[in-house]
Length: 187
Image 1 (cartoon, one colour):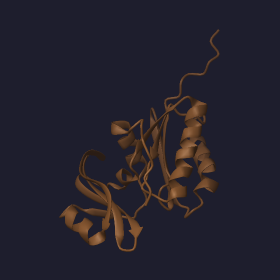
Image 2 (image 1 turned 180 degrees about the vertical axis):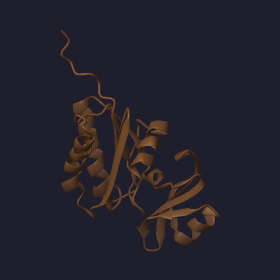
Image 3 (image 1 turned 60 degrees about the horizontal axis):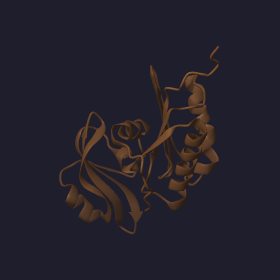
Image 4 (image 1 turned 120 degrees about the vertical axis):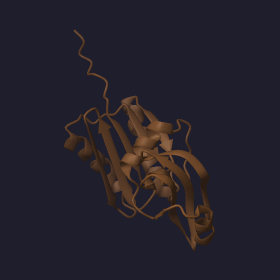
């Protein structure tokens, strides 16, 4: 008799690079996401909110894949999310795909400019082409620039700034082109 439980089909995405704690969960037949402004309290809230997401979905706390927002963000913020994702992946035997947090800021279709505040009149931004809510090409790679220079570089593209990352956008980006060999980026 085989007593092994079936392999989980769920995928978890998380991002802790911004003042928001962003999570998304997809599984056959459903999806859930949340984004909560937590300031610098990512470490205090991440585990309980992740558990709650699985409970609300009626799923066991296990996923076959994780997608992590790799920043740019605060040194501590991005490391909290990365450490948590790597710990879960090790316990669950899951893979971890990394994707820039900026990809979670895209909204809509076509050319999109996205940025996060890098202080002192600077932003950390990128310009992407987006199709079906997923980045399909990088027009200008993520980099730190003055706001004025970035807006000139972005041209007429809609510019989405400083918002909460969309967990499902991050998750779908990770599935489409997430990197297994990722590194963290800091503001």
